[in-house]
Length: 559
Image 1 (tube, one colour):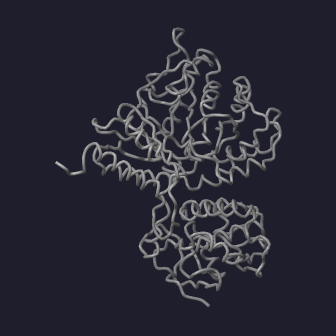
Image 2 (cartoon, helix red, strand yellow):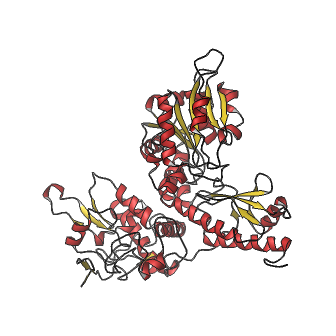
Image 3 (cartoon, one colour):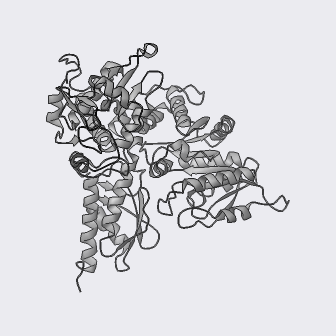
């Protein structure tokens, strides 16, 4: 049967495809296992584009291609003519897919438009696989072509009250994915750019037993990461033949728009090697921020091990350096001075409260560095967060940089490692220096496999961490005795405590309540969100802060 949409199109309402105006979590989970069994498509975004809603191309030269239709944007499907007409738009949830063109558009659509659903599906998949194995409980069932195999079993063991609604502008029959929240369904779902929020579009979640907000490095490998590590194909990376490491390096180079990449054990080593290569003549100088991680938290390794001289400049509140001061810091050609070789920026900036350096500022610094014959290196410990906050691809975020150290264990939550990206010539030099630093590893594919899985599993929903922090910061700002450093732009916030509240006491009392925090400068705390911090965790943290502050200061509003 069919129903006319408000833009004059006709939507095919497929019996058995789910309710007409929403998609259940169990349907997405079953779609995932179908795609994996039928097409070996293990990437979760494919669960949003089930076979039952797709249509073959008519064009003879593309006879094997298909129009694929997002089941959240169009829960009831589309007729072929409507799918064809919508396939040219980026916001429609309909794409022309051919094996030659890959799946980038599909992945981007799901990560930006349906981040809440993707996050819920990730957790449901991990839990289901933990119980039933890699192929799901219904792997050997077949109730007919296009049938929903095992959906009943799936809905029995997950919260199938979780429904995901299309983000539509002109009514539920339209099915066009837009950024509008005008319809009742969209108001319930509230997903898309800007982060996840609680509502009918999200499943109920349990609060973690321990809420660890010391850093985004504290996360444990997900079940998917652990499986990937156990099953990784490995070789010997020192000989250059570990296939999983090679795959990770190729994927990271492509992701960041650079020629090559190198897997290293840590971000500190990434910065050490990258800046060390730029300053390969001992006694060369690098410019950095006075509050930068390179300058404060890496034990002066560049000076000690590489013979590189630091030239720290004062960081402004937003994490940037004054370009005029950078210009003045570049050494003249004089035998009395070291030679300036590289400018180092940090993105996002940790000690400035997770501030995101503006893209035009980074671009300007890249142009400035090129004009003055020096390199631009980005300490990209949280470059994934920066790209998400800026609303650009990782490649665009680092376009101006000659080299980047990219952490895999912070935003992505991989257990170990960073990558350096840059030109092939630069990375070849980094590879030699990695050996001298003791950073080469043998069967490193076990670690690379976890990083690859984290990239596909956590990467698309990083902006949810920002949303959690935004909610947390807003709540903390309302509690007597707490002051949040503004603005909060990513997954980090600094919170100053009233002088009557001792920070060590607060940390100890929160620990008794299974909330783990870290003291910061003075009487303050640093809080960091990550993929293990969900909305119930945010609510508990706020409740604990409110109770403890009231214990010291008395109830809010009391005389």
